[in-house]
Length: 360
Image (cartoon, rainbow, N blue to C red; front, side, top):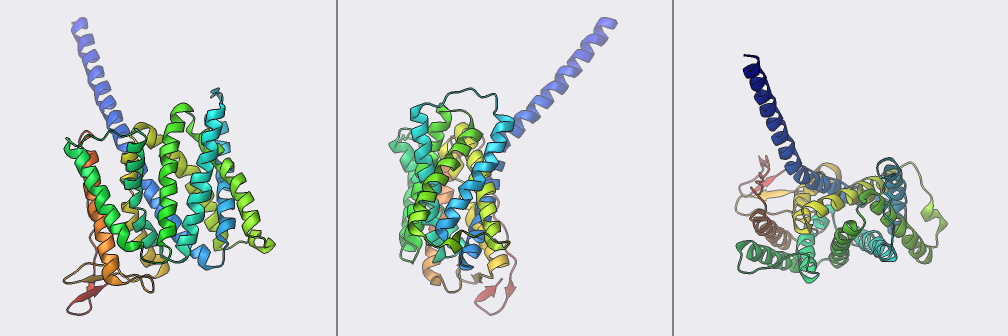
């Protein structure tokens, strides 16, 4: 009697433990998706805040310096709290990688981004950022970090998505500022590849992020001192510019750099960058609410129109090809990931103004 009761209790405990373990595994499986979506929300907000700051007269070169400064301070504190016991020595090879990470991520990537953002809109910058998965995929294949077997449907989907993305980007590079943004995203793609390699050699992502920000701070300070001699440009005040600096340093250089290192280490480069097109939708909605950009939804055609920046038809063509690239790329990655992932398209409510056009 007692033996049977003990066995039943043990079986119930094992069942409860199994359910708990399944829940934990399910949570761990969903965590990379949640992190990628969160990072894209952060990037969209970063585009909006940076645009507002630059339009208010903030120097792009000074903004490049202050961002890594606050990123260094934030991640240094976190590294002391969570990675204090990490005793892995930093070799000269790792120091070399950290130096180039600072140049690619903080100096080249952000400087070119700010210069291009001055002449475009945050939504356009987010649309061009859809090229990052394709650029990263090509660099990963060249560096032999990503296998490319054209006999598989997933590989063909990735290549097809990359070609479609490049076609859309070709249309959008005809506009002022777009070339700088493309060069910026190429630098950031190289940064992601090098970051994934470095974090495997030095498995302390918070410390690595802090050292990367420190490297970017030193190099960008030298660059800014040579290019911007005005002392007034370095002066901080309690306005929108300070918000942009704090957001750039704490959220972008601190938080998202660290989260990207985690996801890239566990899921790979292509998975991490495949969520970039979500930033286009988020940035467009934020642009409507914050900057007052106009969004038109026609009866016979769907297009985005940003007042004063782009022609409607050309922007429609470029945006739609980027959306197709996202579908192809994610189909390719989904075939390699158990279960894949399903995304829902957000429904846009509109008021009909005329027979052919709805204005949101």
